[in-house]
Length: 438
Image (tube, rainbow, N blue to C red; front, side, top):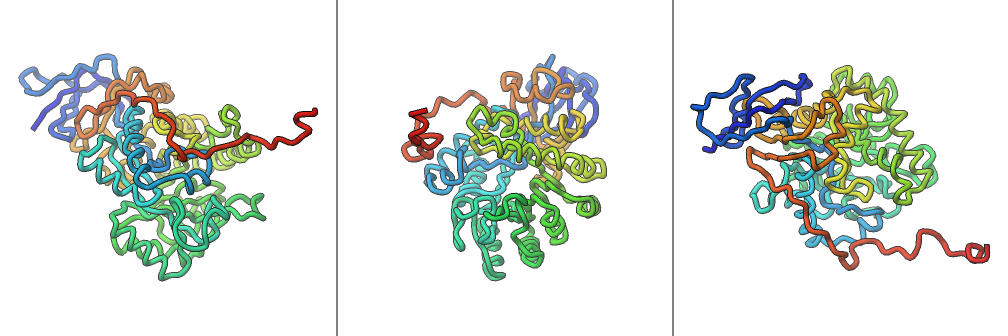
């Protein structure tokens, strides 16, 4: 069994402890020793000199849509993707996560059933990639989630499986578990055309949510819920959900319930932050920018309170869309946690490492630098404990290890256009006569 000894590094272990100097010994795919003293030259193994570098757990992205390939609209995602090609492209895109220092991620829902197959290909060493956990198709009612009328009243479209009756709910949950999913995802809230000023509202009954959770839990699979209002968060917790995605627009009574049950929250503010701060560079609607900015501002205080009261808060980037391309923004959630949620840099790092390792389905096997953990770590030029944005500079991520193996982080060759893959656009506005005459 191979032995590697990483010497002279400064360790950020993911627990929130201040950085400290230590030598890490890796035996096979696990950390076998963490020594704050030098390891004797008599110990056999390949020695790696990490002088001047920070050794920390690799980032874990708890909300990454690996099969979408960065669409700019639901129309593109639902009607311009082909199953085999999407699988091939996902197998290339996943390498971009390694380049950004991501050593594990959760894909909550996928188009077709590609997520499970991609995970299995990574685990079988067919393609290199971070550790992966996968959901199947998100469960929606015919209200349509965030895609509205693009979602049919029944059947499958894109990532969405519409279920309406108790029998349909049971059958779909069991089908996904038979296919091998790690998570069941429910789109608990949705947008209604005549009520958009209210934001997303609950689209499932409490009894329906309980049925999803009970059916999944009977077969040993956890459930996560996309929730963007207080009622949906409350009923998801009562129903027995194991993770809340977003959990925004909470109220104080709902917060008390979340704190009591200690249900992990993955706010996933990266998409909103990118749209609010940088949307103008890609032509985003100004009204949308303000809506998403407000979601962060109005939710920050209560999520901070949840964190201070022991609720696990996890980092997720929602990578996979045009505003959150793969390999670019996985660090951004840490920055938002520090700037908007009042986290210290070390708390944000823990949210992106140990907390995800413990609460996103990895059973605590990864996410921290400790004896017995999987040797998933990165070597960074600089001190992320002083400035988490260092992790957004890929030139500073010097090495990425998954299970003690050095991963190839060379950039991928530039991609050429694929016919019919992106939504074609005649223009960004309507060419009325006044625009010419004026």
